[in-house]
Image 1 (cartoon, one colour):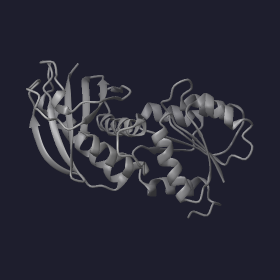
Image 2 (cartoon, helix red, strand yellow; image 1 turned 180 degrees about the horizontal axis):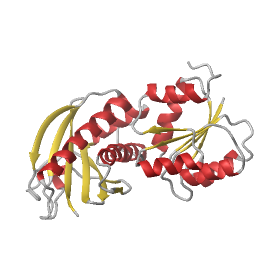
Image 3 (cartoon, helix red, strand yellow; image 1 turned 135 degrees about the horizontal axis):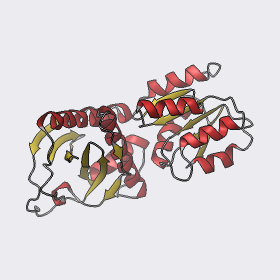
Image 4 (cartoon, chains in turn blue, purple; image 1 turned 60 degrees about the horizontal axis):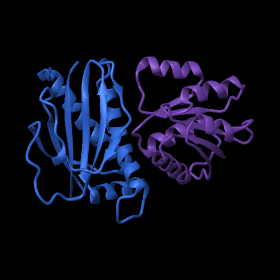
Length: 163
Length: 124
């Protein structure tokens, strides 16, 4: 069962507020929303994908599914530098941990905003892939929201359904 | 001024430690979970405050707070976490925390909590 329209809007708004809060409070960056779309569950993978990272966090409760946040390696490095002044020109364990913490804080904010849905959050999992490589089961209706962060695109995919 | 900072995320410890250093709190002892925290805390001598996460492996923040209070220590303990469900907050208060800081937080919020619980410390 996919999300009902009211819940979908609530989840979308929660995601939007949470991601903006995290960037604004933690590194003083105001995100610009680029695009919102309902996404196909799977689609052809484009050629020449930039090296990228995705953090996945699961939520279970009255609604359940996965929230993912994807960005290029360069964006991930920029985030970790802005967050803890980490100096590197390639993805290392600290960058991976910083992306994991980003997922943890954003989805923690979503969970807080959706209080009353008995939600439990998983630990974040970071994978070395782009959002273009993510595919979803047909019983979810993924929603994709993109933001601009310092010239880099950050893609948030919400793949949730009612329990 | 000596602070025990407990979080399983090394990144979060860096964020908070950096904020503490900016407030002229240089003596920050870090631990990655409750077990490690109790080991470095010892008899609590010299510590002025504990900042702890909730969800951690081995021993979580709630268990850590219970252990510290159970040993009779009165120093301020602030829980720094994404957990904000009312029932959970109540549990933490009953365990003996003095305050709560929700992640994400900005520097102002952290300063506010420190000023409240360390009134004699000169903030930078």
